[in-house]
Image (tube, rainbow, N blue to C red; front, side, top):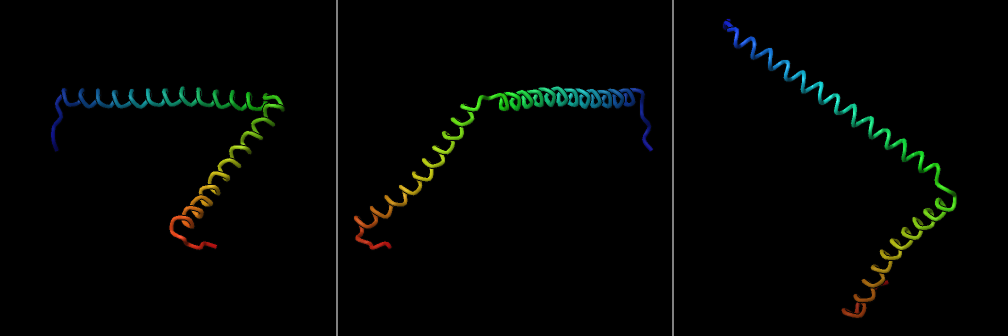
Length: 94
């Protein structure tokens, strides 16, 4: 059983206090950050609910337009691939 000197005991005590302080600081930071983020989230939800109807309709049609544009882009790429395979290699693709 090793004997501890007074310096070892004080060093251990300082380490425990330092670890406890780090833990308390990290908990405080997490609490503050969580409060900020929840407040921002609540503000976003309130703003989203307060949008006028014409803006919601506009956002819906813009989203639908981008979706259709993406589908059209993919299908056009397949069509162009078939076209170039036919013309370059004289391959008949059904």
